[in-house]
Length: 288
Image (cartoon, rainbow, N blue to C red):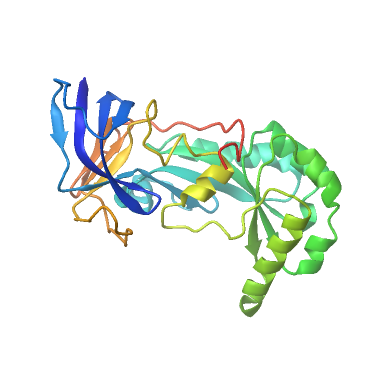
């Protein structure tokens, strides 16, 4: 069915912009300030703030991957997509099995998902990078304890092995907490100098990943963006904002729509309405 989401106060880059969406089933046909000449049914959302449905990060396979886990950790908070990391991989030979293990978990959920992996820096090698490239792993979490471990790596060979897929490396400092800021600063300095695609901060859990991270991993604009030709997945929040205010914490959504299907209304979640799919990222950082 084709209809118009009218007077939508949409969150874009931490601002609220008033616009309207012409939609059909699970697709957005057009985004314009308004559709005054169209005769389609209109859904007036002037009393809501509308955001794209969120993309969350999940660190490692969940201990209890049951219905309550997916609801509490993701759906209840407005997340319909997860960037999920495998357990820490000790060798490139273990990558396929770790990926399959995680994939089987999320295929049982209503969430769309992107699979990434984690490795200790001592196992970050050219064969490992080549394997992640073949497996289309769009980000690699790298654990390290000190800057010497970073300096020692053959970055020229690694950079060559990464091309042209160029999965960004994500820092995970596992040393002394009081050294964290200095170690992240050193990570960024070295990888910037070596021209290695990377993130400057670890991926946060429990909140929406920012747009610049989604772009770097390649999830954006597949997710996290309401665009012409894109997927109809969004949250509605019962809060009022002017068009020039930044967005504070909005709490939980009152409505969540995933791929055109309503999966949440107030406190009720419709768990099995949509089946989750794996997202294959063909080119990380393309829109970065």
